[in-house]
Length: 511
Image (cartoon, helix red, strand yellow):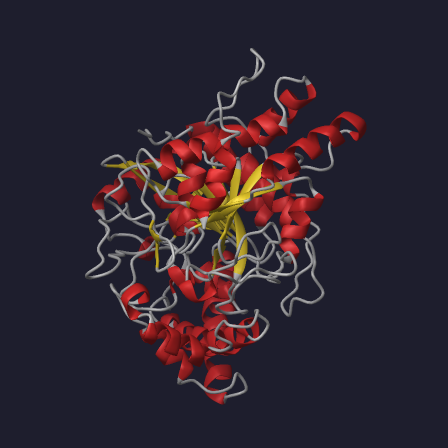
C-alpha cells in the first residue's frame, strides 16, 4: 500500500531549495518553523517535500527503518492550500502547516487504512476522522502518513516482537537497526527520532508511548486518562487507553498535546482539562520541586542506573529537592489485576469497533481469531495469539471478576499508590528510569524487557512524561516523571527545565 502511494509522490521529491536563511534540522521546533513561515523563508509545501525526501532516503531505502507505512497522497496539495490560507488569513492554528505522522491504529479520512498492523484490516478505510485528528486538522496540521506498530498494539501474543506486524513487517531502531524500537508505538518513536515528520502521535495502554519514546531517544507524553479522546482509535482497554504526543523536544510535544486535548462528551472517561500547557515551559521549572525516587522501579541494569544517578545530580543542580527511596510497596500486586481488566475490556471494545467496519472484514474477536488461523503463514509465522484466546474466553464486563479486578488495579495505583506516595512525602512528582536500553530483535523468544516505570501511571490513568537522560553503549535511555491526576503542568515544568539544562539528546546517524 505504501509503495503505491509513495511512487505517486516521488515525482515531487526533487531537490528542495529553502530560502538561504531557512534551516530545518533536528533542533528546529514548531515555533521556529512558524517564524520561518512568517519571514517567508519556508512554506508548508517545502516542509512536506523535505520529509518525503527523508522518508524515501532512510525509511524506504538506506537503513530501511520501515517506520512510515502509509502516506497521504494529498499531503502536498493540503500543504499548498494551507500556504495560500496563510497568505490571506495568517496561521490557522498552533499546528499550521505542520506535518504529523499517526500511529496506524487511529482513524483518518486521508485515504489511508486503519489496520492495527493486521492484514485483516488492510482495507479498513474509515468514514470519519478520529476526534483527536479533527482537533489536529482544526489547528492546521497535515496528516502526512501513518506509522507501523507492534501488531494489535502488542496485545496478541505473550511472545511478540515490538515493532513487528503481519501487514508491514519489522520496524528498526535508528540507533542500531539490530535492536528493538520497543512498542507498541514503534513507528511513531522511530519516525520522531529519525526526523520523518515534525511530530508524531502514539497510543498507550501501558508503556506504548513511553517505552518507544525512551528507546528511540525522544520525548513522550502519556496524558491524564480521558483528556484526549479515544474516539476512532482501535482499542485495548478504556480504563487505560490514551493517545499521546512524541517529539524530539519537550516544546513540540507540549504544543502537540495542547492541540490534542479537548473534552469529548462521547468518551466514557472524558476528563475536562483547563491546563494552559504552554505556560509551563519554564527554564527554572525544576526550582523547588520535591521529587521522589522510586528505587524499586530500577536496579535491573547497572549502566542504566549509572545514567540515572547522573540525572538525579542534574535535577539537584537545577534546584530540585530529591527525596530518596520512595517505593511502591505494592508494585508486585497490581499486575495480575491489570491483565484481567485488559482481557475483559479488549474483547468488549474490539467487538464494538469491528462491528462498525466495512463488509468483508472480521466483525468480532472470535472472527479475528479464525482469520489469523487461516492466514497463519502471514500472521503467525513468528508468534501466536495467546492473548486473543485468553480474551475471547472472558465473559461480560458486568462480571464480578472484572469489576473486582478493575477496582483493585485502580486502588493499588491511585489512592494506595501514586497518591499515597505524593502525600506521604509531600512530593510534586516521582521519577525512575523509563526502561532499559534496547535489546536485540528476537522473533524466536520475543521481547527481552528487563524492567519499566510505566505501569503505575498507566493503570492509574495519571500523566507520565519521558525524556532523554543519556546513553548506554550508544543506545538512548529515558527519564520518567509521573504525578497525580491532571498534574501535567508540574511535569512539563520539570521536563523542560531538565531538557534545557542538559541537552542530552543526540540524533541518530542515518545512513
